[in-house]
Length: 497
Figure 1 (cartoon, rainbow, N blue to C red):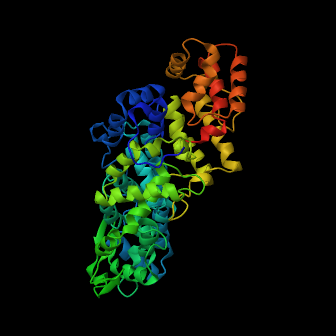
Figure 2: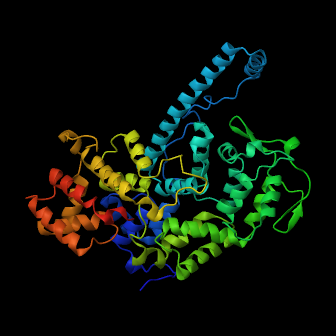
């Protein structure tokens, strides 16, 4: 029977399986040793360990990690030269400036690829998995794409903003996103002026970021919100408010009238009940269940309980996640293995869970793109649809090839297996299997399935896998374990989290 209770999970129900579920959903999975350690903590300490990650060392982010100078605006002197060249039809000078721009384009695209690899490596190596998981959530929620912005450093800035406020205050994050050069550029607010307000940012702030589509606002509210946001722009890498471009006349937004600016606009919509319910509905789908038709009426009631907690905590995210991760509902069997791994989850969890080498990060990012999730490049302002949209006839083929690549080192465009690439330290996984079988090799197949699948494989596949393991002719060590893993990761159940 499915539980919808926000009551804490009973201590007796805290098991290896529930600990693994917490680590999968609140992060990107972990080795059997890490899961065992989490289970030994008890649920309350395990949840606190995941949420209160501030005491866990994090990889330092240097302010000079990436070059902020690539997209430097033209100097006054360069602008004057360009203007003179246009007026005099000086093709040579114009060509010189165009070459400079082309050079910037190439350097910036290359840096964006390095930033993609940097973030993927961070997710793989982090000791603070929830921090990166929430950074990924916010990236999909406040979606901006490099292809439109064409400034890699602005994307890097925004990624750091999401990380800084990962489990912090949602209202604070909204106010800061209105000052993000990436967001201001992506939704054209840098071109919004008094008398010529651009409605894009105001519309998406209401529809996609704060209230949810159609939740209690009108077209008039959007137009008035756009007026409030005039003058919100950026200069190089820094937010800039331009008073001369701001509409200082009275505006009426959601029934409140005054000389509102962008911050006032955000605070007005944040005060609405719809905000907490919209955000918690998205958090529910991200962390609890995004299956078809979810959340249904009863599961929606759990999301509403989350929203009540969010309002009570004045938009602090951490207490809401603590409620979720301690609840009976989160660990209910109906919610385990109920979400399809996103491409990023699939890549990172396979490495963190099995202990495989990460191979080539550029190849992994290319695979993520083929599977429908290229970091820093969501398809539109709605972000990724997720759920069943991750799976189709082409992506499932890439998903299976990806797992084989990580396990064996064999790329899908190669035909000869380099045995040296297939050899990696499988000792931790071998030990975990041995500990669960007490030396009984007949149980190895079941032990491996239980270790890495979020839900039980159907009996037919489990039986077939047992038979296959028998044909390997020995205990599941090194080459035999690698072969078995290739088969397990091809199972439909492996795509679930």
